[in-house]
Amino acid sequence: MVVAGEDQNDRKWMGEIVDHLRAHNIYAVHDIGDRSDAGSGVRSICRCTPYIIPIFSEKSFKDKQSVEDKLFFQTILEVMTGGIDDSKVKVVPVLNKVSGDKLPNFMKWVVCLDTDEKDFMKNILAVIRGIL
Image (tube, rainbow, N blue to C red; front, side):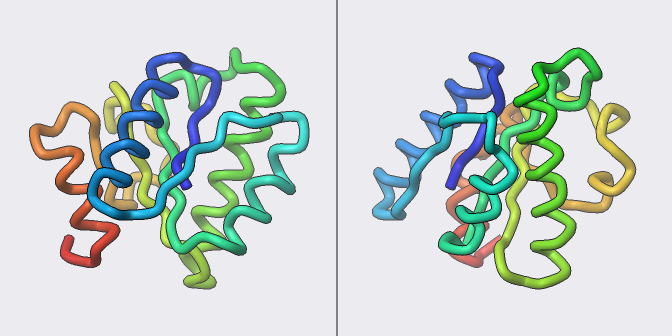
């Protein structure tokens, strides 16, 4: 499952990642659904998928977000910390034009993929396949 907030560039990446995974015979879906119930939606998704790939841009960490986006990303961050501890879902965060100093402290120790990396799409495949 690939997820993104309201930022159009993040959503563009979301679609490209899903298309790339599908082209390599990996079942992938994206979520741009109703954010009003983002908490329960993301939690239920995590019960039925081995990976969640959230896309974070600088807007993801700013105070001036819609209430729905704030709830959505707060839930993703919960899943990241809980999912890692419980080993129920593997989280592969993708950074879209975010410098390291903008990340919340708890994310600074997590290996993140970056859309600016040359082999970004290959690295997503490697992570999903357990190679990286």
